[in-house]
Image 1 (cartoon, rainbow, N blue to C red):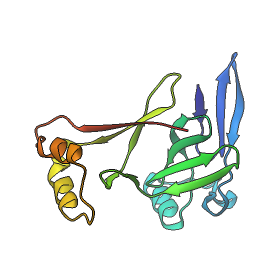
Image 2 (spheres, rainbow, N blue to C red; image 1 turned 120 degrees about the horizontal axis):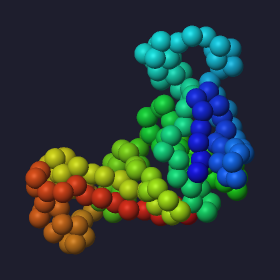
Image 3 (tube, helix red, strand yellow; image 1 turned 60 degrees about the vertical axis):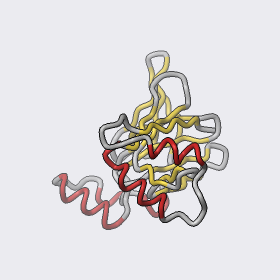
Image 4 (cartoon, helix red, strand yellow; image 1 turned 45 degrees about the vertical axis):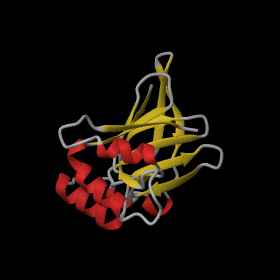
Length: 164
């Protein structure tokens, strides 16, 4: 089990009744300024300040693979920590490469695994069909058949990925 604290750059592991630092994240230019940490913030002001200045103050939805850790923050998008290089990469949007559709949010799968799900709601299928029609390269028949068989009342598309 891992947990985080706001305004803290560490991810902690809970084991044997104690908390140990699992990773420390070096935010560099995204670092929340130390000079602002003691200030009492209104939530709206804090979020506006962080959004305008691209500062991170919280980590959520952590999912660990063998080589990478996926997580979100108070900024929109997804962060990937390369554990061996100790480098963070920020993606404003993840794209499903076969269909070339944006996948805005993932859900970590709880437990021992390293999986995440991206959910594409069925009510957005009209947008997806319009994106597919604009593609320069043809979509594989299996995807065309899948998408054409769905409508706004269908279950969502769920994309399941394992982290490396």
